[in-house]
Image (tube, rainbow, N blue to C red; front, side):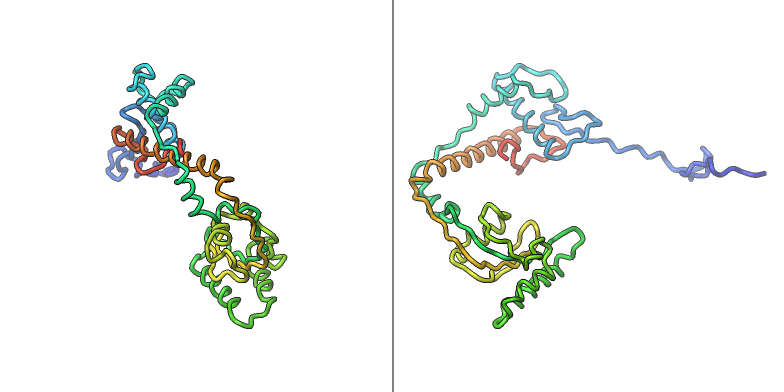
Length: 285
């Protein structure tokens, strides 16, 4: 007698009475995130972390607005979509509950004195660089060793003035390698924040020309940088910047106060399925 085995279940021999079939595996239940028992999404709905946190913060504030008498009681089991009334109520809640001190002239002056390099206008550098790009799959340790070796070679006395351009052409992962790594004139706004900090804002970089003594780390990778020319720029007087500095410090103070208020609400709430402790609320990002 021939047997057609193609129809046999892959989980066992095909007999319902046979123990080799094994038990049915039930799908793991999906955890539903909630604030004080109010669900933030439907059972089958999948949200990315940022969207879930935004929804959680909004629901936390909506519930607080209800407690403050700014919104009517809600009897649903899922968080409602925020409407104009809810948004106005949340704004009123935050105006009433979140307070931050206005920065005074002395605080603005201290900020100015501590961050003068950040306020310089008109500064620019003529630079060239060699980029060792960090990309998926690249062994970072080996890449860093190769970058350090190239920097050491360029740092030696008597090295040829053409060697930087040669290494940039051979090694750099930047399109500027075709010009020997030359980026031309750049300002702090033209480059990644990490490069701007190393080249424009550090005390040891203020007057420096020539090869930067250390590798510069950025979101793109590791850079060997040489400053060819420098345009110093001008530092405005404090009186020119006081209003701008005051506005910036006021925003920082408001963000801090809002963050502390949200942390207080989180600490008082029953939060399930979403991480809010220690995380910045999307409202201040």
